[in-house]
Picture 1 (spheres, rainbow, N blue to C red):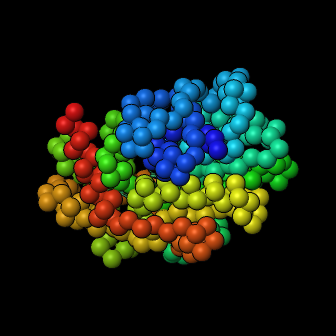
Picture 2 (cartoon, rainbow, N blue to C red):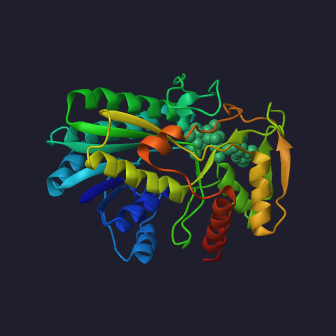
Length: 338
Ligand code: UD1
């Protein structure tokens, strides 16, 4: 069965392609290489023994999207990762984010609605909850006003899909990720951030290899046990597996409604200091860091209630923070040794 993975050469996309191929799906990737490299195909091939089909295409080009679906008219399901994801950049260039993240989604759905049936998995984010009132966060926690255009594209994306599914043959699952980290155990694929990493784990591993002098810990005065902010760090391989399960759920018509939403996290919150300590443990290195003021727009804590994902989707995160940090560290060392 053929599955389209947009953004399939990116961080989460590439790990998902591996899990799909391991489960016997035929994968076709669309990627515009704006934040990825064609070399990722080699990593996927080494791990799985299969090279996915690849079309270099920009989803903002409506005619190209139409041509793609004419050529690949046997696509049974779509997992849509392709999107810009830098929060700061989205504040500076909102229209770039709205055009890229929203028009691509609309063009894909316009093609899918012409099919007798279509299964669509959407890459959403726990950012839609803002600072939720109650921890751990359940899927029915209210969606709050977005703090950035990036966050807003996730909220608007969810709404567009929900409105469209109501009146078409599209069934969809919205996956709200917490904080994806780590790399495949083979270290053939992993995260490749452009420029200075904004996210915690790549900044830590780059500091570990000496590419950055020290980590700035953004805020030590949060109302948390050690004063640093708390997040739910989920291993990217666990996250990838959830996409395969979600797709199988739609393809086998086990979904209970046209659109379902699941949190994807471990259920465990870890502070910035705990992540640093995990890194120090698995790398046997001291990480240089200094305490700095809070980063604007950051929340105090976010971790998932995973009951719905565990009991209804039938998926559970299995890998620990230490395993995620160890794989991220191995990956960083491999990338820098090239
Ligand atoms: C960030 C985005 C969020 C997005 C998510 C996707 C912001 C404000 N939020 O979430 O919208 O969905 O990435 O990956 O950018 N930290 C440091 N020093 C650093 C980097 C981070 O102390 O150099 C801290 C942060 O303050 C935060 C934690 O580490 O408490 C995690 O940060 P990060 O990896 O950027 O993720 P989020 O802020 O949760």
